[in-house]
Length: 83
Image 1 (cartoon, rainbow, N blue to C red):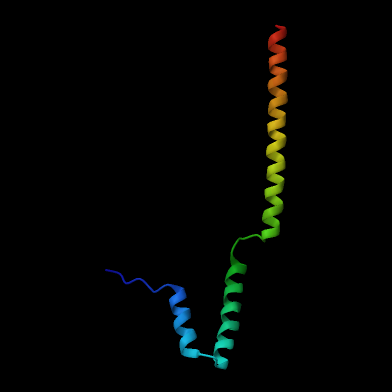
Image 2: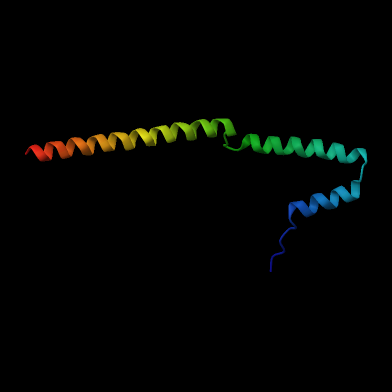
């Protein structure tokens, strides 16, 4: 049976209690931020601003497609009624 590691929050809490207010805590915080920023930088992610901008473009595109579908349906009905 495999042993699962403890949640990261438990590990961080234990480290905080061991380090207290020592200078090591600040150094550890800075190093952790650096490591996390480096790891996140390697991921294929976008900023929230870019995501929001693309979501807005998608919403406008969907609305335009729906409008064009309605116009097309009206044209089809018009042609069908004339035949």
